[in-house]
Image (cartoon, rainbow over all chains, first blue to last red; front, side):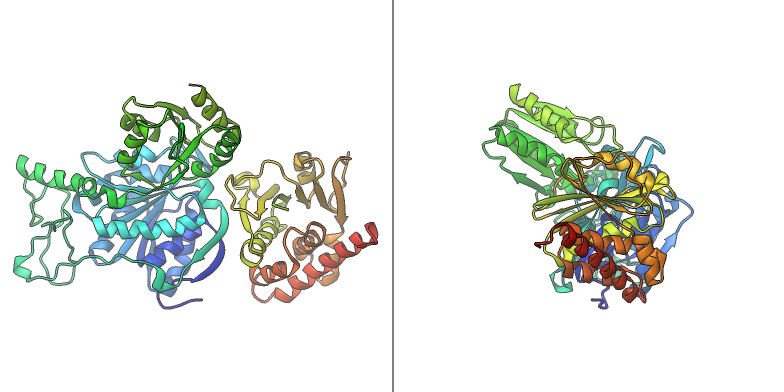
Length: 385
Length: 187
């Protein structure tokens, strides 16, 4: 069961939080800093228990601000690293998410969402941090956000989060919620050789020629790590390709445009969504995370009554699958968007649909999941138009 | 049965969650079924009445919460008072005989009980009453096969207590089988 890489190959009956911890270990994460908070606490509990056996370091920090920058130090020292939190802590991390974006530090932020704002409902689910994940730090930048809907996906998508972070050198958010985090289901951890890991791309040219932020053709620069003998400078200030501050309009335009474009031009390889009976549908229900499961009984009921209902589930909330939604907007009558907030991803659907299809939002202030009837009623309402 | 929605209730410390966990693990790891477990979570769940919600199904589970429980296992009076009304008509109600007085027992449910605490004491540890209940539930409900349950008990209890817990499981299982025999002699 237990091999040197720390991968617990086999079938487990564990919750989403624990599955996330195992995904991180399997992805090669060996540094976690965090300030435990419900409903994410079980992730760091398991990390603290498991890390001594796999050569990892876990530090319980003084707060989330410290946690979110400690992981970036570890990354520049060559580790794969993540921090784990929930809404109140996520809010404190925003400055350093911007720092990770600006310094192109690949790292993973896990947010097990609970109902907010502020302290809110600590032990109950919501999906209220979706826009914060995208826009919470100041300035222009890009991030990737993934939305698991089961413990199995908490494992799988944590690995993908690390891979994407390394591939594009951006902070990647794993947007769990209390329901998925505390739900216990079967999780299959595959053999080590079946787990695909994206290894960090390293610069190995002559020391004198190093341009720390000179990108390859995919707009992403390779990395070096502290201690290899390179002289490097990493700063949140606007910097040139050497990494030195260069406070000019030109440098700003060049750098920040690249930070945004490296995700835009590669969006097709990042975007992930799942479709069910979308072709020929009159109505498409757009969901993500736990809502992708609670919507299914409502969709099935509507189909039984003869309504042509498709289901599109966002696995990546960010980048948003603009192309596909735009395509569908000209084919379907309406989109129905249930989410555990009072309106977040629905605005993206609206923006991209551009008035070509009508939109029915199924809001929920959080604290539990949607009732099947609420989603069914919204579908029926949309069919009638 | 395609889908069983189970609610297990008791007070904090009785092993309510472990009971649910063992049934779910047995179903999803050792019996080729699907299981989703949600535990009552929060400060209000400590010490007072607590519950585990578990769905066992032959098909992939979408909606994760139980909405119409058809099997209920209750180990405290408070849990009985709080939860018994949620059981669907025709459902099975299992109670701990000496901890639960089934006041105003519903006529539309199948009720069986077991003196699990006493049986656990006979084995030597009162704390394994949850496993006695789990064995009894296995016999009465057939929600998960016996061997899968045995496998799950072995790997889910603290190391060193496997034998004790298996004895507790069989005690409950046999009590349940005998009860069924009495009710339906032809079986």
